[in-house]
Structure formats: C-alpha cells, structure tokens
Image (tube, rainbow, N blue to C red; front, top):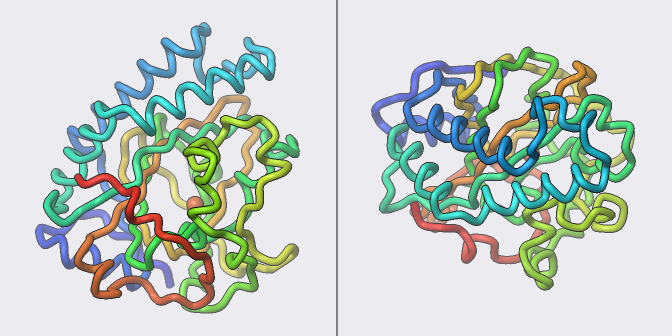
Length: 278
Ligand SMILES: [Fe+2]
C-alpha cells in the first residue's frame, strides 16, 4: 500500500528513511517553491514569447517551439540562480546543505497528445530514475507550475518498489551518456534524440500492476524515492503541463550505501561527481 504523507517532519532523517522505505511526501507549497514557480514562469514567458504559455504549442511551429523549450531547459538546469533557489527549498524542507548534493532542476513540458509524437516516446517510458546511474539513496523533488488533477501528473506503481521489473538498465552508462557534453542529460537539445538515444526502459508490454495517481496544487512539493517505478501520464487537456524536478542525495547515506532497495538496477557510471553541493 503506497503511503502519502503531508507533513514534512522536523527530523530530516525521518523523511529520508521513510522515502527509502517507499513512502511519498506530498507537501504544501513553501516560500521557496512558490518563488521557484514564479521565476520559472517568468523565464518561460520571456523565452517562448507567446500570448498564453500553456497553449504555446498552438502558436509556434514545431521547430521554433522545440528550440525555445531547449533553451529554457538549459537555462533552468545550468543557471546558478536556479541552483540557489533549489538549495533554499531543500533547506526549508529540513535538508542539511552540508551533506546534500543535487542534480539540478529539469523543466518538463508535456504537450497535449504529446505521446502521439514518436520523438517524445521516451518521456512516457515507465522507469525508475535510479536506472540512470543515480545511487539508491536518490530522492526526487517534483513541483508543478499549475494546479494539476490526478490524470495530469504521473503514475506510481508501488507493487514494483521491492520487486524486480524486467528492464535493460545495463545499457545505461553515465560517462558514455555525457561524453559529448550535457545535452542528452538536459534533454530536448537534439531534436531526434528521442528516436536515436538509448534510454533505459522496462520490457515492452510489462504490466506494472496497481497504478497510483495524485493531484497537486501549483508549487506543491513531492519527495519520492528515485527507485519508485513510475511513468509520466499522457494528457489531452488542450494545455501544456509544465513541471520541475530535481534529484538529490544525502552524501553520507550515499557513501554508506543507505537507500531504497536495489532489486533490478544495473546502470553504471559515476553521476555523483557531477552533482552540485547544496
Ligand atoms: Fe522519472
């Protein structure tokens, strides 16, 4: 049974260990997440330069849309201003900056009927984030830019938190992935990477069992184990779904091998060396 918890505990150790055991924290917005969402919306408005950002796909041709979203993703992932806001958010939620490191914020852009576009196929592959060479202590932070209903967020498959999912995670080597620079990691830089790059995924047609969804207000905060098996939900609401997520690790937990159980992750490479200290 998947447990959602609403209150961020005072003791950060309690949060981390509950997450490693499969619990999911779904907390109210905090000052930092509200600031992050405002900043991200400002950046999206200025770069997309359209009347309504959630309908930008209707105003821009595919190439222009793709190029501008790529520029935005790069900015939000790389800019120090966004790193600092993320550090503040983590501290506000009880993470000790001295022992926390993160893989920065990624902007996710899920277009209405985006699942019908073959180039976007990897976005919807059910997966564990740990299959991308993250340690088992990986905690994922996720926050949406708008109020989202259950059918617009993502699906969590709790039956497989502690059970093997047939998958090809052994194809993923982090050092190989970034050998030509961070573009593949940031995503959306090379238009055809959805067709050509190798993404770890579960066996086609695999039945993920129980599917748990959740709704979330704008700037609401989700903390979930990177080892949870999950998938982005396709949507056809007519509006783009924008969200942000980042990956974080408690360095002592990573060093001591503390974290969620590893039942099937065979990815390799040293991603922690590229994490940023909070
Ligand atoms: Fe994911």
